[in-house]
Image 1 (tube, helix red, strand yellow):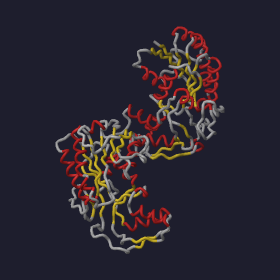
Image 2 (cartoon, rainbow, N blue to C red):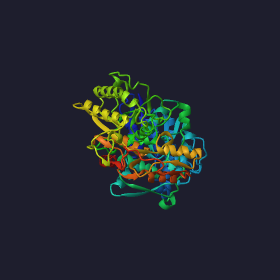
Image 3 (cartoon, helix red, strand yellow):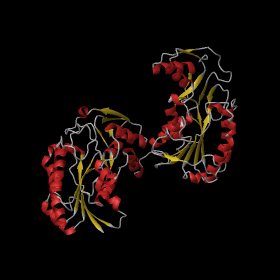
Length: 568
């Protein structure tokens, strides 16, 4: 059994280490704080260490109040520099490994690219100077040591995350520094690294921060978004903020030695933050607890599908992507080779028993009278039937405004359906089949109706995609109808966010219009599109007549989707 002595055990990292080792029968933790062992007192340290005889000493004790260090320099030196010196000498006495926690503040923040372990030091504050002094004592004195530099640490206790959440309770707007960049790092993730290091003899100095980077303002926005806090974050400069101690403007550390020596990569900072918030029941959901879901997306590489996959991943969900190819699918998704329309009754099991399925797979969606719409219906029916009977808890199927056919005004969930195209007929039939299959089953059904989609135009087959192509060909004009028909235009990114939110929430189900609820004439939208892109091409309105089955004005009733998006 290994005996580990932890100093500063009541701090964020100390608590994280205790949590990490709590079920490890091969590790005995001895916790100390200033009352048990004063690290600034060399005699006290030596006597305590001799008595305990630890195999490993992890020094989490530090004077971390950066501004206070400027006015209380002696205390900062004693804790951050003399303390590690005393621990180094005591570790040698009992042949223990010393793990010393240090900081990004040993650098000046002027590099503008991630700092690696061997970069030159140039601390700009008393805190940084004393942390560097502590490092140098450890490297010079300790026989077996790990110096672990981390940054922007948060864990159980007083930290930036909790401070921002407290401010959200009383404020609608917060001002946060936007010109300092680093990596928010979970104490839990650092504890994993320390354990990894202590199981080796690859001594030296290591960086240990989560992957990725952001500003303090961006960090704050992520906290509020994950927790469902409607608070505006206003970035301010370091100068405007006016802190006494100078902070590094660029504080991003690269975990180079971790990768080189151990092949180890730490968690992305967003992932670690989400886990931290979830463990503390701080992530907002309607039922009061975190609902990270495993979501199957069929047609994941389609025009809309690839955007939905990314939206789900950004929300923190695990995504299983299903399609014939995956060239445009977000790399964070799990790619499944399971045959969607195999007819296998166990297909729900084969897909890994997802919590939710967004069924978007569909052939020839832009060709409204293709025979395939009717021919493929049995495959869609069988897939949905087998998923529901397999135990799928939630199913969202992509519908369309074309189920309704000719209609003037807002489409609600009660609007009668009278489709006039094979595409609309097939979708309407599938909707009726789906609700019939779900009748009496413990499954939530979301039928998501889409309207006029814009964005990612080269991958669509809309008039806007055609305009892009004609512009690139150098055409000066293109023939068009009157342009007077009004539609509900929505960008593919906005639509995807709505689909992702609707398919993973637990309160509002049935027919849901994914839309803006705001009608705009096609001509106005075309003119706006051309202007936004700086195109020279111009439409010839009235060059051919309007189609008789196109409504003068049709849009979605957005009441349900607005509630869903508000409650995210």
